[in-house]
Each structure stands twice: as C-alpha cells, then as structure tokens.
Amino acid sequence: MFSKNQLGFLYMFMSVCAFSIMDLIVKWSEYYPLGQVLFFRGFFGLLLYFLIMPKNRIKNFYYTKRAGLHFLRSFFGLIALLAIFVALRNLPLATVVSISFAAPIFTTIFSIFMLNEKVGFYRWLAVLIGFVGIIVITEPGYQSLNIYYVYPIIFCLGLSYVAILIRKLSTTEPVWLISLNFSAAITLVSLFTIPFGWIMPQMNDLLLLCMLGLLGGAANLWLSQSFKLSEVSLVSPLKYLALVFGIFFGYLIWDEIPTIKTLLGALLVVTSSLIILRREIYHKEKIPSNTRHE
Image 1: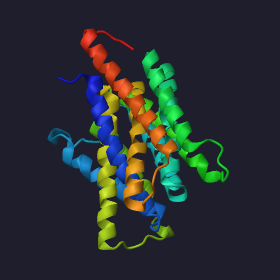
Image 2: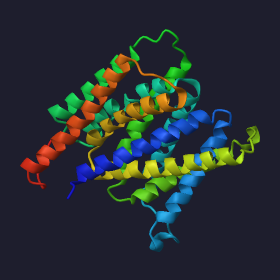
Image 3: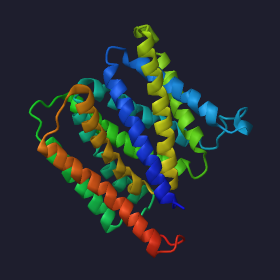
C-alpha cells in the first residue's frame, strides 16, 4: 500500500508526462492565434471535468464557500499559462523547460512561510542537486538575452503561488472543482480574443488542439491531486523530469542530439528526484505513518 506522499509522487509524474506532451503541441501550434489555442486548452479540459464529477454534484457543481481562493488560483494560473505559452512560442523548448525548473525553489520557500511545512536536509539537498543540473545544462549568461526570457520566470512565480493555493483549497474542495474553475476561466478569457482573428483548423490540427485541452485538463487534475496528497515541497522537484522528456522529444522529432553537458545535467536532475522518493520510502519503513517527518 502506497503512502499519501508516494501516491502524490505518482500523480505528479503523470502530470509531468502530460504537460510535456502539451508543451510540444503548444510549440507546434505557433501559427494559430494564442487566444484560440487557449480556448482549446480550456474548453476540452472543461469537458473532461464534467465527465468525472460526481453525479450528485451535476446540478450544483459550481457551489463553493471559497470563491475568493478559487478566483486567485484561476487568476494567477492564467497568468502562468499565458507566460509559458508565449515563452514556448518565442524561445527554444529546452531553454523554456530549463528556466521553468526554478519553480520548485520558489515553491519550497513559499511552502515554509505559507504552509508551515518542514523541509528536511535531504529535500534541500535534492533541490540543490537539481538546480546544479540546470546550471550545467543552461550555462547561465545568455548572450542573446531578450524580453522573452522574462516569461518563464513569470511562469515560475505564478506556478509556485498556485501550488500553495491548491494546497489550501484541497483541504475542503474536491480536486475536480479546483481544476474545473481554472479551465472555465481559461475558456471565458479566450472568447474575448475572437475579434482578433481565429483560424479554421484542418482536421489533423483540430485533433491535436483537442488533445492539447484533454492533456492539459488531465495534467492539471493530476497536479491538483498530487498537491492534495503530498507536501508541496516534496513533489514539486519531480518536475525536473520534464527535462528528460524534452531531450527525448527533441531528438525524436527535431533530431536534436544532446551534448555531454546536457546529459550530465539531466543525470543530476533525475538523481534529485530519486533522492526524494528514496527518502520517503525509507521514512515509511522506519517511522510509523502517523508521525510527521521531514
């Protein structure tokens, strides 16, 4: 039987896989207006949540006593989503993924002050190892620095705050409702971009755009479930695995051959996630499940 933290780890892994594929579709869809792509992300994610919600909530699915927190989650989530979409369309995929790995560092710091979570030595070590891996890959000091590099940082800050809000909401709210409200907000905002010109997609493109929404919806649901089951500072560093997927898809689709530095950095990133999982299993074996640790 898995512990809550281990299940949270699994949900985060599935979320990272889905988000990685979604990023590929977003980068591919650069010829479609950003607002139109947002619509598919929001609308088809919304359909997914209506399919999985309990039957007894169909008539009053919107009911909540924490509308303010839902609004903040949707607002900052939308800012983060817009930022990452713009970055993916204007920067190399590996660059965007690498910079976005700063998010767990912000999340760890936020979780200490906002959630009073206790972050032990090994988790800090894992985060630092992952960060060193990113430095090895990106070699800080971009010679072609431009305004678009700011967008992944905005994404990191927004995502970190969203992680804390989800943690708070999930104490009383069902995961599907948290995600449904976010998709509804995306869909609503995207409709205001219709006057700026949408393009009728071809059938193949339409299928990919629909897949973008379903993947985004499922990934967001798994992300919320992960934060509900586990401490934010525990599962967030697992996002580093997105780099491995980036290397794989880059080679498979665009014939990008990773350098030795990229492979070394990726190894450090994977190591950081494995340290976290191994420490959780160790504590599960050595410490009773009702004892709070690390």
